[in-house]
Image (cartoon, rainbow, N blue to C red; front, side, top):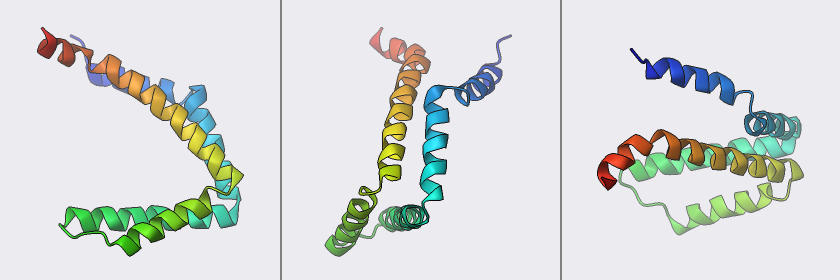
Length: 113
């Protein structure tokens, strides 16, 4: 009997060894080493989480909050370590999209049939 969870766990282990994941890990470590960039990054993550929770509870995000988020993103994008992190994230996202297409093919074929 096939156990897809064993296969998924094997895929997880193999993903950890891909250039994309290793590149992301290296880029994240590099960005963390830059105290100013990492501090702003953490601030942005907290702000995004707060806004998501606000939206989930049915509250509107104000124009000022959107502007604050954009301003912080602009500040962050000036750091080379953050630019590198974003480039590495794009590579990982592209790989994950391809993997998702492959994994979801059986379901897609049912509805295309």
